[in-house]
Length: 91
Image 1 (cartoon, rainbow, N blue to C red):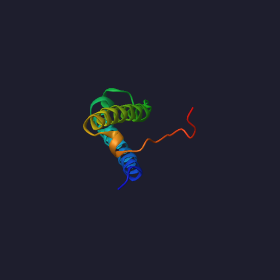
Image 2 (spheres, rainbow, N blue to C red):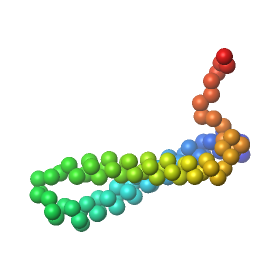
Image 3 (cartoon, rainbow, N blue to C red):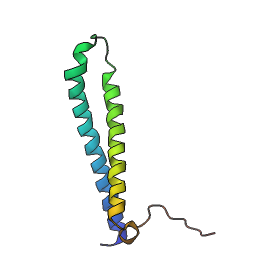
């Protein structure tokens, strides 16, 4: 496999990982909210789903950031991956 295929597979794998973390964190936060906080609030509060969704996105980006930093420390990125954006003209 060459560097371009490695880069493509890494980007696809990282995207799938980020989506899985976002979905899992959404379901965990929604269950926790329904079980712990919802009984304490009045029935007119329906904006909880948006808050849970935004918090799950933040959690997924934070986890993705830490995992990608760990991955970059463990693997020589320049050896196995091509840069995603390359300048056409050198100055």
